[in-house]
Structures are given as structure tokens and as C-alpha cells.
Length: 337
Image 1: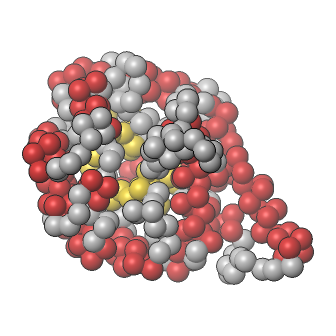
Image 2 (image 1 turned 180 degrees about the vertical axis):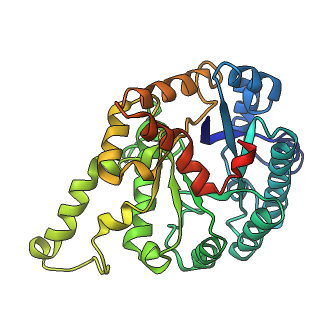
């Protein structure tokens, strides 16, 4: 069994509600383009045909970007999140052999409503976690207004999935109008992930909520590769610059090692080996980022499976990445798998 914990879908009712109720929206926005070009986001039959090419492959689905709070203000953002989560729960119930679970989306521009929706999604809809993006309307994830959500997710014992966010409209250099060569996607997204999880560590969130579980997309962005530099910076900052800016009870790497890192590196085995060396195999879960490739998801599934196979792991170690770690993290019922 291979459980893909980080892939994306656009529930039909959710997309239709966006098209109907979100006004003044650029028709070139990602979800509008993707629903037409990457049609396995919305066409379940096409999605299932691709999934059938991979033996014993099942998904835990989350809603594709942009999140509701990026395109609508409350109360519409709340309504969109509820519609999306209701539909995710319906998909899991209707297609249990395809979808092992769903990850809820939240109206993060209303923190109180986000907490309420997280509880509803987990307790009533039986979704397996929630997703937030690397910033909330430009605010970092260690902002005080988000602490109730972390407390709630810790109490529920369910993970938060972090997805990067960035736009082509943000230029790479001063004097330019846009980001060129799609560097906003290639480089800024991994940086956004690294920045967001670093704020959770250095902002004291992981220390304050010791039971909080967080899943990072794209294998933590730059974090595994920069682990040595982060550790070095913690130790030398006070000596070099005459000031202390890290006030944690433990070394920061201990908190970074609490995150879960998915395998969505577009087939890059070296990145997976780097992550395993830094955080250990028990903190790695299988994720593909399906369906965002030129083959409507086929390539990402194939290449991600192959990248894990090339890690040189024993069968029990591979089983942890492909299945066991996800079962434990998401509390998936063994009888259904």
C-alpha cells in the first residue's frame, strides 16, 4: 500500500461556488486555469485512470491553491471552506478505495472561524488534518492570532499541513515588475516553506505546543539542506554580532526534527536522502504533489515512487515512508487500507 498524503484536488461544488460568488477575480488565477488544463483536479474518472496505473496506490486529498482566505473575505471565505470540506468528506465516503482521507481547508482570515471549522472538520467530517499556507495575508505563522488554532490542533491530535504560497506578481529584484523564469515557483516556494517553519520554531510555537504535529510540503523546502547552517547560526550569532536572538529551551534542530517532511521533491532522491539524514525516516511521509505535471499527475506519482526506491532502503524502511508513518500520523483505520 502506498498512501499519498500530499496531493491536490478541486471539488466540483467548491469550484462552481468560487466561479459564481467570487467577484472581481482574475480569470487567469491558478484554480481557474488548473481546472481546465490540469483537469485531473476536477475530473475524477481521469484521475482514477491514472491512479489505476500504480498498484495499491491511495490518496489523502487536499484542496488546490489558492486558499479561500486569499480570494474572499468572511463570511464568503467561511462558506467556501465549509463547502470544500463537506465535499472532501463526501469524496472519502463515496470512494474509500481511492481516498484514505481528506485534509481540511480553513478560513484563516477569520481566526476564530478557522478554529471552529477545524474542529468541525475533524470531529464531524472525520477529515484527518488541516492545511494552512506559509503566510496568512502577509502575516507570519507565529502571529498571536493563530495560537488558538495550534492549541486546538494539539488538543485534537491532528496535524497541520503547510503549503507554500507566492505569486508571479512579486518581482525578484527591485525595478522589475514580475518574477521572471517562473522563479517565484521554483525558488520562492521552497524559501516560503523554510521561512514559515523557521518562524514556528524560532517564534516559540513548537516549544509552546509540544504535541503539535506539522507536515511540510516539498520536503521542508530548504530546511534539510540548510540544517547545518541553522545550527551554526544559533551557536555563533551572539559571538559574531553581540546579541542573542534565540531563546529556546532546546537546540533549534530538535524542533525542526519534529516536523514531518513529505517526499514531494519531483523525483529528487538526493533531497530525500538529505532529509532522512537530518530528521530521520520516522518523520518522512509519502507525498507527490499530484497532479501538477505535463502528464496530469502520472509523472509525479511515477517519479516520486522511483525516488524512494532509489534511496537504498530495506523493505521495512520503505514501508514506513510509503504507508506506516502516514497511518500513525493521520490515525487512518487499518481495516480500511
